[in-house]
Image (cartoon, rainbow, N blue to C red; front, side, top):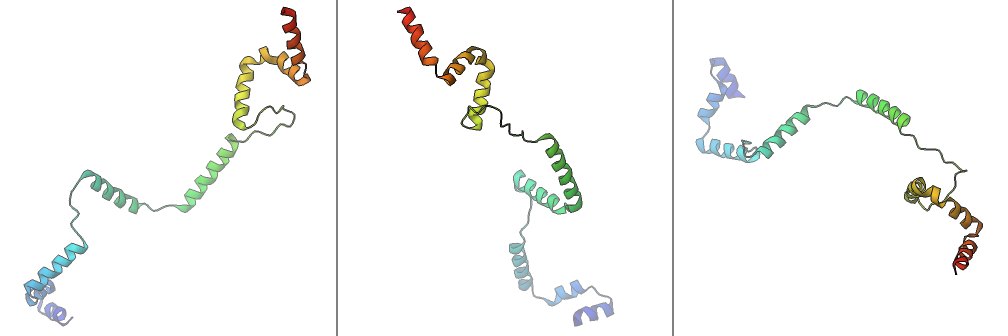
Length: 140
């Protein structure tokens, strides 16, 4: 502090006065310590350069919490409007094991239902076996 005040009174540069008073080997040692703590981040490859740029730019972004909350509410409302679950229909026939099997059964019904209606109704009434036996014995 005294050296700084004396330099200001005489109109000299404090940094220059300090450099004249300190030894060269001490300055070299301090510079080496600084280099170890904060190495030069010169160009080494494009990947590292891209990462540094990303960290610098993302550090400058300040999030606006109010705008985020407002946008979140709008998105939730739109999601509720367009993505509603179908209501459970208790009157629909349950001929499936799981949701995946239900979808498969619906596809089968769409393509083969007109051919299998009488067979399904016979199975429900348990008369399919008798009909098949009658048909078998007619041909024999």
